[in-house]
Image (cartoon, rainbow, N blue to C red; front, side, top):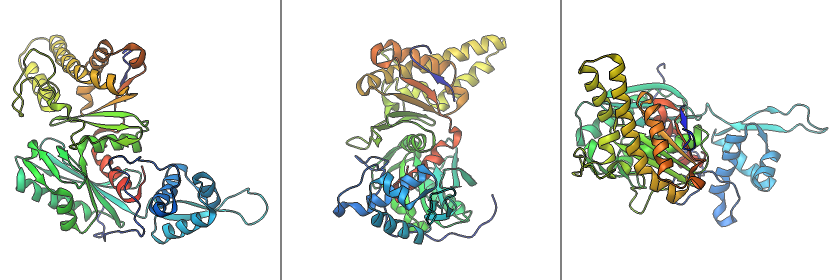
Length: 411
């Protein structure tokens, strides 16, 4: 991870069956829902929530007894035992022996999440020229991979390629599949319909329902930056307030505020790639405007500029100096876009996700300096700007987090 603060700086497996654990927890990854349940609800609303509460407590708390769970969740022992029995039947929780060194009497039986009982299929559609897929475990770690060249495929042809890849990946699973998570560029509504993804040639594509019908599995689809933000929250240790900037084919952002994802009134929160940054014109964007953030910061634009500099000759030192200038200018434009957001939301942390060789160093520092110069120091001095620790698999891991949150209420 690289950080800057504004104040200073596989094997073959059987084809899995669809897994549908009984009781179905209430989805967490939804507008207005806190990702991590922490209190009990009234009985008429409680069962799905309390099931998630028990799973969440075990997922984060490690090995606990039924009595431990009752104390930590505030649920009665009867309710806790009933929920644990259900989770044992669904192979989501396992008993792992008795606690040693306990007080006299019958030793407590310890429980933990059955991390080997299910697997997750993840798809990342955000990278240039390639579709990425993986089987992941319940900790978001990759078990097996399968990629597919995208080429120039778009529209219906691309949709067919995504289905084919998903089937290939599912065939690699060695345990029942909990669900399929997909991170895709574009504006995605809560039903998993891609409302608009110009880079993929998609408008109004019901990706979630289409994949679920084709695969016979539960599917959750989200914008790639939102998926990456959820990965940072679930597997990267980020706190409750977070903005993740995803730099790839385009530029987008995922937001978590108060532990809840922010989608916006038309599900386009975080679409900062088409914010015009500066008054000096700039290149024409695919959207028709000039000077959008994507024209300064997208991965194809930056790699193209750096490649051009290397082919123009001159000393290695001169090429490095000019390349750093390109990266600093891109960071400045990002900082211009982020300044009002930081001022409005008083964010604690901004994470950059994309090619480390582009984002770390001059670009990150220039972003931090620009945000500092354009916001009130009293409130932004503690803001952390850093690159992600989760590497190039962040969207795949976010896809796993989508399934954990959507199917089990765990994050």
